[in-house]
Length: 528
Image 1 (cartoon, one colour):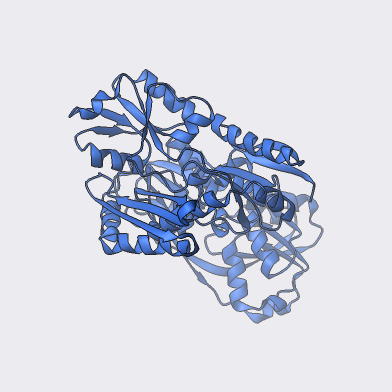
Image 2 (cartoon, rainbow, N blue to C red; image 1 turned 90 degrees about the vertical axis):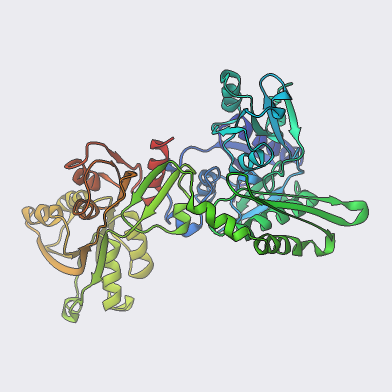
């Protein structure tokens, strides 16, 4: 690996400040550093899907992808934004000395409004909202999004608001702390708030060793306890959770306080513990267990039943837990498999005929082949396929792919010009489209179609509240229409799917990259 360390950063003022802080400290230690601004995930392609890698964080996933693609050597994050489970292959290389851990109130006129019955506070954080309503139950809390600069401008412009809540560290770092502000010492911060974290690939020992020189052991200990507490309580759902740990070195003690709130702020369960530093690894599990024993699980489950998310969308295939976490907080996702598949029995004689040229257009066909035969039996000379993930599966389980395209039509156009054989064996499903065999036959190539699997429509009636539907193939569109009207936004994985959707839907959106994650990002961008 190069001795130049490339630091990946988002492009907000705060993100750049944090990245430049790391850059300056590493340069003082003699390292050569380059900053690399990172763009949207839609512009970046991986060989594996995001959910398989465990990439979930809304504010961190672009940098995670850049690390895994070796576009950067280290990524700099606000640690409170980093998921408690890091993606496969990525490690925490360092945690810098913590800044101000507090939340901060920025008020418009004065602080006296806190004693009034009616007031309006802005925040986009469930945790801040819940704690404010717990302390001031008659106040109104409204949503607030955007980077630090944008949120400050909104507070200044909105005369109906009395103030808004920010992370003190963020304001302090970019020197935007207003005079009309005060630390909220009573509010329990987000786990790891105020701390900057450096992530790196586990295999990049040079970057890890360099980053480790910036690590602050006290901050690392405290934030680890806080994040372990959060992880123990999360249970796959978003809940208002606060946690803060600090060390009294002269007494060899770690002091911890954590709390879980209901989203409306009416319920609060708090726990605190003091432990010797040598026994600090037990704090998170003990305190999370105490929260659960006092009724924490019921609070979280009740909140799930009254989810305040405003936009409902539906996926026509089941999503993994990691994929569902990619949706913005104001989007509620439901899912179901609108196409179910059954692998057919493929006669042995087909494989024994020593097929030279094979076309595979879906992962279903690959799985059907592997259900019938071992990898050693599938000795094809030339394999042509559709889709990056299909290609990855073939090369992992069967053999090298000679050429791949993003859809069947483009593959047929390529083969009609470049294919030199006389026949192709096409492993397909019963609902396959006709472009490939039609184009190949018109080019004088014999196409032997082998039905490897059967697909069945299995749509369900969708609730009227659903505004958008995610589609992954023309068949999912056709299945959907058996039970539902085309009166919603259609979010499509690619051009072929979109072509089918456009026959029925008035509003069709197409993902930049033919992946589930790119469709999810498309949904997030549409409902910003």
